[in-house]
Length: 182
Image (tube, rainbow, N blue to C red; front, side, top):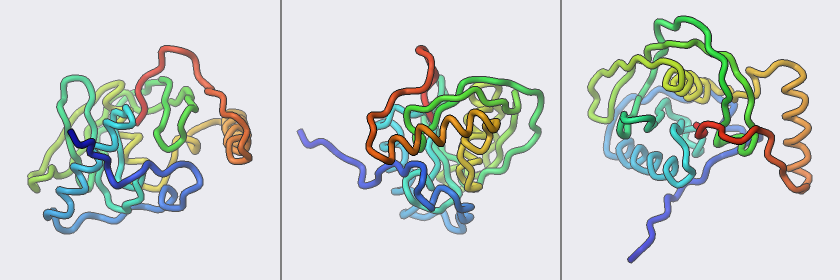
């Protein structure tokens, strides 16, 4: 049996691709289909629930996810619409591994975009699914969850990230029982 390993690795804090707005996809072709397949594989290997293309170094407006019973989904050129309410929940990120924070986001949102076959799709999500849509679109806009932290949380997170960069052993900053990362 041959083990298939995705050719991409998850980019982490400090990688410049995570800070740039991703480019619109103009043609959903075989290259995009292969990229989407690889994104799903990387997301699963990392035990994530969502992954945006910039997280693997590709500056394209694509995210994939699998949450609850949704099955694997892809949203190309997503646009968030109809945000309602407010919800605070613990949130982590594959690009900022081991750090978790309470973040306030819209409780319910609708995301509109295209699937891998070029058909327009629209998904409405509440709570976890709404958080995932917002988190992934943040990635496509060049924003990490660190930007959503208050000043004290950001200071603490940056201190821990500096410790890690200096080669000190990482300690996980989160209570037990947290949600999967996106």
